Image (cartoon, rainbow, N blue to C red; front, side, top):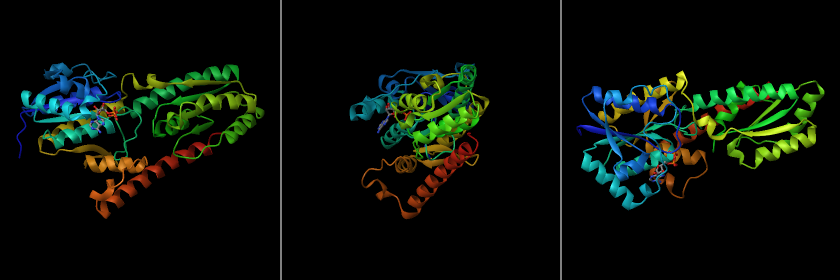
Length: 354
Ligand code: ADP
């Protein structure tokens, strides 16, 4: 088995609150095992440029509670080129980096699998506020983002109540309605619009008109970013025109990506960090750490990414060829499970959204 003397840790892609807690857990777990740790700054860009520093236990003090990522993040296109990859591998060889824990989303895992194929074992930790990684029940930052959304929507609701208004609120989630569905329930929204399920503007307008007739003053409609940036503003105009209720539009956007992580995210990120570092040091690689029904497990990155493509309808021709029937059935079952869970939330929201 490969002996690890030095590992690296990086954060990449969209940042998420709790990335710091995960990186801290990776650093401290490895150091406790006598393994040195390099912090790789600005994601894969830092690996290409050599923007790398050795981290001691105190270098990760006072960050478990902080949003953002002290390692910074980047979207690095050069890493996708053979030249960029060669530079990254050369940096690892020069510094003696035997393996890397990469904290990020599906793009980050694609980079991690490429790097593993070039001889540097990598393990992925899922961190994205959207919770759009099919292989895991939870991602780092999701809980914090949802808590930020409900705090902001509660404020909008106060002013909607005072002025007898409606507010259409667009929340993040590029391909996934998880944030929208959960926060719609938690904030008592009148309606929710997500890409996973059919939506009908006319029925939303009717519901608001009826609510007003029955004396309801405030209305919140949560719209997921995944339905397109034009949708929310257009819906706000339509609601006002059809129901007569003054309607504002708010895009929460990146505000939801910042802020101190919640207890749930701090604990989850710490568990993932410890688990990932231990898995890497016992010789696992090309895997992503996932939570399934409360348990942490590792899943092959190629399997996880292919399942993700299947879920998002972005499979390339032939992509399933390297998987056997059992594996494909497992992917489909997981996808059905995910849709089932989202549908349950959607049903709850619809039952109580008068
Ligand atoms: P996220 O990890 O949040 O999904 P991105 O999709 O931007 O964010 O991916 C993060 C980084 O991972 C990219 O900037 C790039 O450096 C690397 N990456 C993404 N896709 C690939 C790929 N197909 N091959 C190699 N590296 C990739």
